[in-house]
Image (tube, rainbow, N blue to C red; front, side):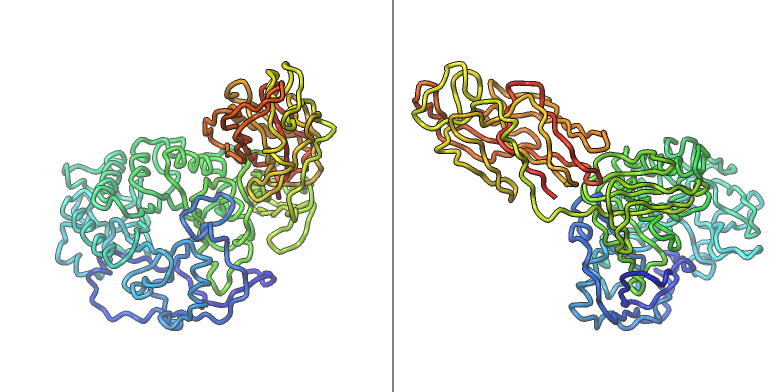
Length: 600
């Protein structure tokens, strides 16, 4: 871990979880005395993560951090049961959820964040009595020799037998055992070895297809995928209300990755797909390689298209690379974990909040980039040329340093937070007013004038000189003069802001699919399409809020026209990484704007 991190939280002793794989069957049947799980919170010195990021409130601009507990390596922890309320709150303010290993973790369930239990889909540990009691539940080769799950092998044997997931009795045993664990208080399962490719061996690194116990024939690659997909579907059916995470090999199945129908069946049986090594696998190179970065991110897109989410599990610490990869693809409820970052070495960068995504990731000057209302995520995949990038302003990096450029070598990333304005800025509109839309009561004006061109206007008596919307105060133009804007381009105060808010309405009926275009100082634009209700009839369109309602409007002959007349509020998310220049209103005289503000 780097030694110059700006924030370190000493909480847990650092442990290595990657060398521990637990078989559900072993856990459920071992009967051994287990060490007490330990927790030591030594000091707390950082602001907690955004509350949004530790709940199930969607937010693509912050990290939902999943902490993976160290399981049987817990003997070096101080007793977690004695954690103070302050210590417990730190954990709950930084961890969205925890993957815990039963039974060591069970006694922490009462105060820890929501936890999922570890579960190995189809292995049986070689020392487990289950292997002796049910030898027919172990897959075998064509000569009848038992096969291993191809993991943790020494050239002769491996640590786990290959459980026969084509055997209905074994499948039902696993589902029953998992149900027992869920009933201990876990809200879901982190399911390991959801292998959509043949992964059985003789212990000597030789892949050997097993005999398919359902047919008596050598299991084909397609049959293997079908059995795994069906097994996962049975678990989903048996436990419909829990969170299910599949730990998969993203490149399994036919290409492009994720398009194999059986792989998609497996994905649909889960809520989350865990991606080991996240984006920090050196094989994830630039270019069109089938195993490159673009291919893996395209797999993530497939998962999202199936309405499922991913967890980026970074192995080791590579600065902002893993975090940047997460932000490039996050849709709001994706997760992130790092097997090297523990509360002993909590990384302040994981507390970064970037705001709302302005769009999808895109290629930019040799790197991948995604813009948010409050910052930028950049990633240069492995094999990429070192590039120095000039930023569209000054940003704060995860070390707390203000920068206006960054240099990224291949296999590095950057997460940059935009400077925040301190308060909303009113947009001066006096020079842009072009409609007589507000009049004092009893005043007369042309019958072809007013807000709608038909002799009606807002009453200045009811409207007042200002109004509040979204916590910001908006001023209105003068009565009996030019006071409203339509069909115009308005110059904006230069700066970097999160949203453009405006007060306005449609007249002469609802105005559908109206386009507002914000131009930035670099010439780029953001386009927003909005429906606007008629000022006399609210249609409750998406993105529209009634900011003010009046009991009458003024008529050209000095009389009042009773009814309910509204001013509506609208908010458009800007690219806060850029400096605003102007906004072009719809070329439609039936869309009127009374006031605007830029909000940080």
